[in-house]
Length: 116
Image (cartoon, rainbow, N blue to C red; front, side, top):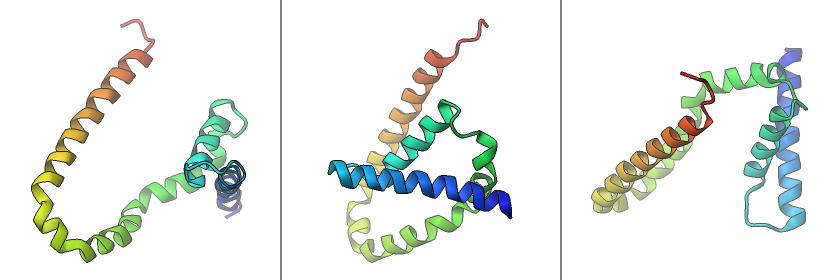
């Protein structure tokens, strides 16, 4: 329980810092995104140890499907629009997925420093 509270404190601290930066600088990037970048930088520069946030991240990953329920229900409000525009939506999903797969593949090859 103590580990969960510590992990949540770190994550919510980064979220608060991101919200603060977003509000102070008045930039159009959500504070949650800035908070994630701050957490990533803190992990990268070893300011926060991975094992410090792992208890909550493991729990959130395990229960991730729960977080997709509200957006899924919200999509049903626009079922008429989805029904009318589904071909364009499917093309956008397929094309963007292929682009992401390609970009991730290129980036991972560039980041791979092993001598295979």
